[in-house]
Length: 280
Image 1 (cartoon, rainbow, N blue to C red):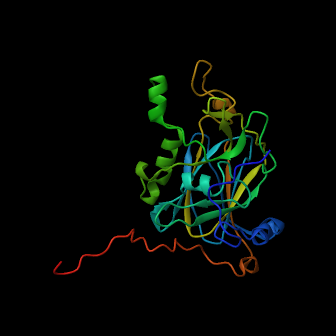
Image 2: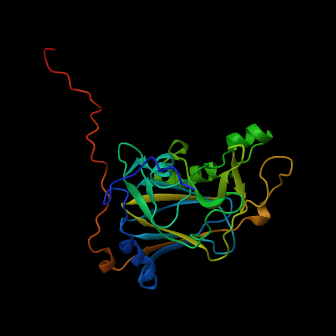
Image 3: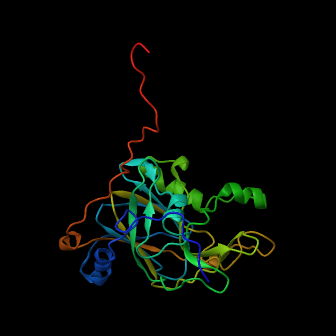
């Protein structure tokens, strides 16, 4: 069966091509990286942290399956942040090794490149589910109130809001997420579905910072999503929640040979407008 060609394609050697050999070296030499930061994010909470350009970051399921919602910003200008919709178009709706997470306009550059994914061979299951989802977004207390009539302050949107406060950011800076370890798809009614997280203890999702970034992660209150959060069968799924670990590594200098931080889009952003001239 022939497949319809993707809409967004680049010429060979273009912006969407990735030097796989360069990024593959980070996994092949992983034991030689210097661990510079590590911490655990408790269940139903969030935390923000910095990852310098040229560093690696791993999200690890240290105790068991857990879905986690990831936000990324340019550390020096939070107006530049991960753009889930454009990443879906340029890469895929579910991302894995060698895919990149792109930033918003007018910047449009890779913020990170995915260098490791222990679930990379999950593929597409019998129900159409795939992992590491850009289709949906974070759960939030506004939708929860609308669906249940109750308030709950530990949805991913709220966890991320609290996490970024120390960096001077607010609820308005929290954006559409990458749902790490989450298994999702579209059903026969073209509606979004979520499945039980296939991750196990020790699974990881790893990325390389292409510029200085600020990350924030929420540990989803649904845990591994094996228990419905809404609908007639819903209950509190706290028993399937597990804390993930975060690890930041500095690669050996020689592994970065030839690499340069990503640069913002080359378009001059004039949009066809002309400056007024005196006397016109």
